[in-house]
Length: 444
Image 1 (cartoon, helix red, strand yellow):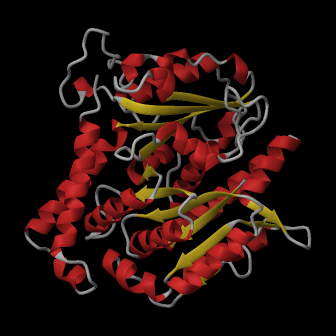
Image 2 (cartoon, rainbow, N blue to C red):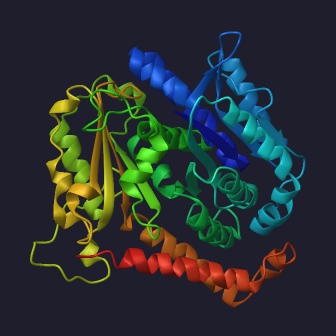
């Protein structure tokens, strides 16, 4: 089954090509027929000339990044974007969610929907949609939210997994917290699950683990693409009888988003290291999984600086404070293992009931997929997709900063001009406060 990716705004149109590049390279290196065939069907289609085109729709209100992505893919000589798969204009959204959602999105609805329909018609079977977008600016957040709403209206039975790039905490855009609040509040009603990457964490991975001195957006996007690819590439579930999963989005949602109040997914992958070091490094499954489990329970989102003092609570310690002394409680976790000797990897540490909330048994809360094909040059790699309290702090920070601005009515007039009322803001704050409360009280 095929996934239609929507690259929305500058960020989405920069992450998308990196994701398709990594998937393409991984398929070429794997040289496993069933694995390669499953991956190609998900993300590419074969043209009449024998080439491959990405199953993607590219949308931005400015042409620069879309053009760069299309040209770069064509020059690669490996895959390309379809000639009629992209749309851009010559005027941006001004970093204003309201302009994107209420003005530019509706204005260009017909042409974007036509691009999506054309892409869907080229799929033998549709698994669902994956919009790639940022929450900080205007097009990715505002137009991206509007396009997601259109997808839900057009294909109500299809899965939608939104991938969001979270802005730097220090600030990229003065109104980024407003845009983030409005985006999240609306997407929570539209999306089946929301997978988040935090720019601050990815930046640390580039600096501390990959030893990149001058970090560019390309470096950051490659890390995001690596982690996304490790989630989306074919893998085998315990009772799949040797057949790769057919619907990656549906299987991901089924494993992790079992309750409509809990849709926020975080992801972390081990190991991360410079390409030049991989050939000289050895990994063992016990070491990788021990590290990843501790990252989960201590909410350490990269290998460096893991807090090894955090321990799962004793069975008798069921009542806790808001964050149970720094312990990260999970609703559900999906562990994806790829590489050599994968079937011998012991995953019992992730089945510990103490990791999870009491109202979902751990045998239902934990899922594991495995694949013997190494991913992106790593002999062994492990990826954890978690629906837990991992995103509680960044979400709370965004809401707090946005509320502080809103309390003084800073820049609110810019949103009112484009159709977002103060009541809309208050509704969005209320929705996110409810989500924060729900995640805060995940407990035994």
